[in-house]
Image 1 (cartoon, one colour):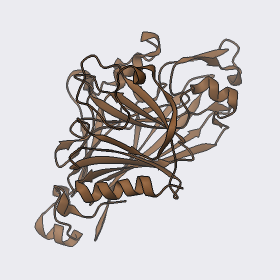
Image 2 (tube, rainbow, N blue to C red):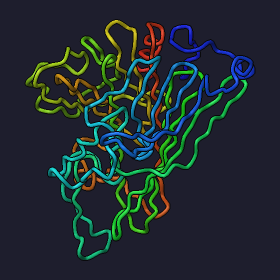
Image 3 (cartoon, rainbow, N blue to C red):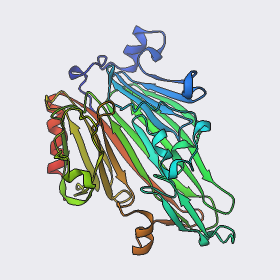
Amino acid sequence: MNDNDNDKGPGLPRLTRREFARRTGDLAAVAGIREVTLANGPEAGVRALQLRNASGLEVEVLIDRAFDIGDVRLGGIPVSWRSGNQYRHPSLHEVESEDGLSWLRTLDGFLVSGGLDHTLFGGEYDATHYNYPPKQTVRHGLHGRLSSLPARLLAVEEDWTEDGGELRVTGEVVQATAFGEHLRLRRTVAIDVHGTSIRIDDTVENLGFERTPQMFLYHLNVGWPIVDKGTRFVGRVEGHRWASDSTGEQGVAFDVLPEPQPGFVEQVWEHDLTPGTDGRHRVALVRADGALGVEVAWDASTMPAFFEWQNLRDGQYAVGLEPSSHHVAGEQAARDDGSMVWLEHGENRRYRTEITLLQGASQIAAAEERIQGGAR
């Protein structure tokens, strides 16, 4: 669903590679990838990759933060949310602290991934499948350990073609312990030289020889100015599987946002979505004035569940769009009802997601038609 109509956005004219080359001595003036190292405060030492294209799309991939995505901008306008935590170096994170809630100190930027062997609420779970007598159980915090693990950079590719091309980066994160899980995430993030879409292609593989649970969640965080008073949530919602208690106490609906609220208590909804004929779930956030929006599409077979996180408090003000491999009841319920994903040695599970930034009425109308009109 790449957008080729740059007349409606801040991007450059759509020229051929040859015509761009006639006008500049370095195509990096048009689009490219730059590797940088953040150098100050709690972010010091975090390596990042900055992808920029001819349509004004800027995407920051945080190598040392699980190859997650930090800032996202379109024509200089921020799309991603900033929490105030900053992109803290992994060495500062204490994953076992704060009774399992320390994950909240890593929550910042556009994509914060949950996994690889646990997501959702924390707790203590049976670990006898690892066959290590001193370790009968394993304790997990909120959304697991992944987000504070550094990645290994594998590839940086600027694949120009005459009519455009693709910018892509690949990294891998290994989550492992002796006598426990040994899982590897291999992630590719790609954008086109022209267009406003971000593609994430993830594969999780069990490198160990013990049967291992595998859970995965994307916390895609959108902030102002897409999140604003009157912003609409768009999705083929057939019902609500679950909603936090706060949804009944504050009078804030899931589908239209208010302005920032003092002391707002986070609201979480698990929506039951109907996939499209292509097997994808789709949702969007759209500003009330129709100027900007963001659409998320993902493979419903590997991430059948979806959460909408509303953090509408003064000074925070964000919405999280959260495709998930498992439903809200979490790990123990999935083990009990047989829906847990278990990977044997060498087995893998692939996750594919596309995020498209929307500009103007025609693009937003087309996105709403894909969401509402393409359902099975």
